[in-house]
Length: 259
Image (cartoon, rainbow, N blue to C red):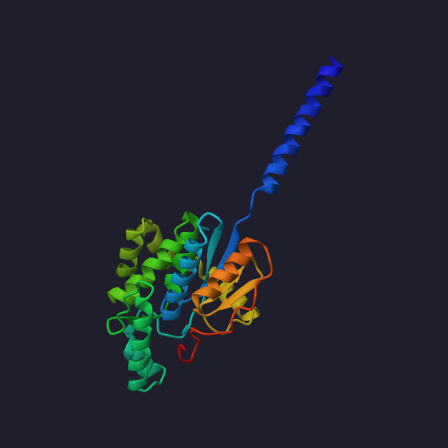
């Protein structure tokens, strides 16, 4: 009887060790943290560039994207909006000619990534509530889908996202509970999560967005060349030290021009 018990004990230990070994051998996903703002055109382009790199490397099941909050203009009045072109002229002080040139260049660049920028229709707004909803959407695995929908509606549809009902329209399209979302907006829920992301960006010295951190190590600042995204992601997938990230370009900085 003792021998049978001993054999069973040994078999259980072997099975436990085998399961632990199998779990340890399973490749961990590459975490991609992305600081961005909904009203940042380079953030939308950078999102597409990262998605292209993921698709090219066939890494859809090997990465986890974590959206981090960042506000380019946290002092913008809540529950109000203004034409984005007027915003750049009136609030940021850019000459109209410079705004026209900048938006035309961004429109051309966006086309390369399937983005139909409509800056004349877009309306700038305080993005705090949108970020709170993205934080909430993480609970349902919908943050990436909601981020895409918000940027699409802001940049291409000209939807005024300072209006709660418009936000609810976007949420409903991605399958989120609009009644629960309204309750969140009527409270301070997820505001702390937004503030935490912004505070962490300051600790990391992030001055502009988009900003990508892969596996807490490799970084990409701005919507850089496609090859930068591919090389750094490939290195992260292989768990090797990446080459230089190429500096900083294609970035929006608070109180400064997107460049």
